[in-house]
Length: 454
Image (cartoon, rainbow, N blue to C red; front, side):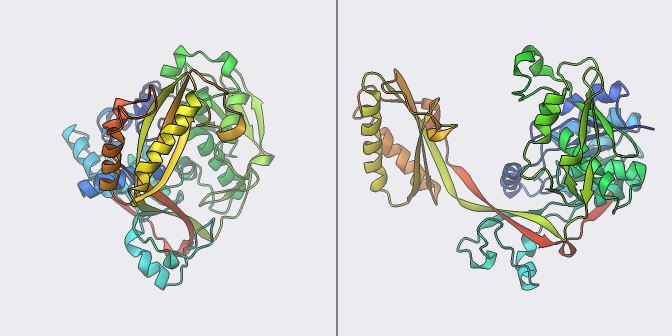
């Protein structure tokens, strides 16, 4: 019998309540919520530093309050990686919320083991060089050791274990995005861990579902001429109808705005993919080049023919490192001779930054002209207005605050007609979190699954 997976979250802050029409309408057998990115983990680390009981997404609370009661009543499991840096605390919060709602007998599972920040020294002592994937630099040789996150991309196995234990909601830390969706397929169909083609098909299911609105017409260039712009505010989120052989039909919640077409599926299929023939995940290396897409009716696309190869001996580990703070100001310069005024303003700001040795980097861009595509197109010769974004960094917040104060003293002394956005003046310095991508031996990582009953 076809197994139906719904996707109701593609980022932290997505509208998770899109799960309710799927659940109430009986359209799904399981719903997944994918919330994490490296930026999200950095945000959650800031939360956790302020309160050790936090470190998970606010969305988990909403899921527990509004969605879990409806799903539990219909025996529809929920899976989320919104546990972030503290899945155990998130699970305890969900357990307390469920108890307050009278959901007796409900099982909450927490998956941990991805966070290895406290183990970095031990891992290096055990022989893990943790080389930067792009530069080749060994972690121990880096001058900046101010790491604030270190999370391994886990696979589907601990989620499968939790589902086999009867979990009604599974809350994880950093599980690779598509593996959230692969896990319930393995649990339901009993796919073997070396059935590479079926595992790869499950990865494609997850990859197409994980960004919610994008595969149903959101963010689509291919369907831009056929987009119902009003409907974008209330898209129905995607559902995959998966067969035991791994083939599936991608659709969306019935009677909701949006569109599932060959174009939207192709766009999402290639999204964030470097090599379509070798899409590496913790559980399998998927080959997208063998799959076939076929229209299967209104808002329905059949996906079949996915193949896969054996999983790698290593897992990806992303480390987040504090690399100072950044600040930005937005200036407006008007005609006539706008470019001469811009150069005068840059010289004036340069003189101020030169008096402040703590300023590490200064970048200028012109919004609406080169902020997206750089020098791909020449700048206009004498525009009516130029909006200048000035971004500057330092190792400490006080240097940036002092720089802004010094810049503001030029309010009546700058180039003719120069003005600055008041909202940017009142902003605060922001953390700069640098990414250190590396690999770690699979055997070094041991996920843990804890199941608690309400």
